[in-house]
Length: 424
Ligand code: AMP
Ligand code: GLY
Image (tube, rainbow, N blue to C red; front, side):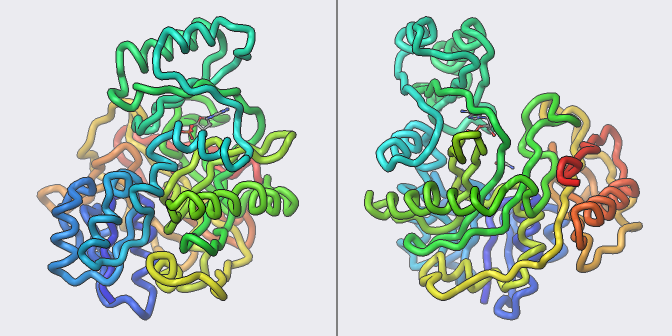
């Protein structure tokens, strides 16, 4: 069968790498892909938000299954457009993707279905928001969130009233996130440890994926600005079996059932960003896609063929299916461009890739690379590579990953040195 993967990051490289191993797959296209992806898929320069161009491509090539990496194409209705043309998609419909596309929608949904999350208020005027910030009901620190997508920058944790008023002004008056800040949420700041919990669903049945931890801050010891993710490991060292059960019963099951009850059947992958608080797990956010770099540590631990699972979510049933996981651990260290997550230069020559011997325990997943005119691999994004290793233990996987990181260099590169250290 022919597969189309939409996206260009480390997550999409990992998806292509995993699916090309399936005996069911004869060809993979990736739009637009990157230099690393071109070793496992044919890359085609179509922008992931050009839904009509993508669906023309899907129809012309008679694609059997389209797998969508990022959220934006789903929120823009890729699933719905492809479905009209009889093309199968692994991913959420536009109606279901609102779980990620609108934080107000997600919070109101959770409140209605009694899914544990931080207490919150919704505001559509800056005056009302500011008078709440002045009231006794508002506890500090507090969290101000833009309703819509904001390139990962729409959440501001505010230590005091002046920071919170500033956040409200930026979102609602200066409109730094455009229409995404027309409505905002002000919610309680939760304390605890964050975990990423991902699951596959056909809309009715669901199968959880292996647990994982992600490192969002740019610098060691969780300092510096927020990023897309500077590294990850799986399984999580912080999730007890009791918490795992609670997450399934109190969060996952009511979410999938609740979406079905509301006529927004959730098919595809649901990524719950959770805070493990002393009162139990709470939802921070929903995403309707694989995490990046969570996919990089989860998929190499999956011993089952991914393709039948994705097909079942797209148009069949997960009933009776399960997933086999390797017993060991997996660690991913992200190598980023100098300046990331702020502005950075592109086009830096990536040296040392030829020294790396990839095998079934070591993978270099490309996130932001391209070829220059001489055919050399150069940087083209903020996150450049994800070095991923498997091992019998976290420690073995971690050492293997960092050994490999030590062989690669490009001008200005930076990476965290403490990925998975808390799990040892
Ligand atoms: P989100 O885009 O909602 O995932 O938020 C981005 C990050 O902000 C999360 O990964 C958390 O680290 C943090 N965050 C979001 N909501 C809260 C909250 N209610 N309390 C504490 N931290 C939060
Ligand atoms: N690693 C966080 C995310 O994919 O949103």
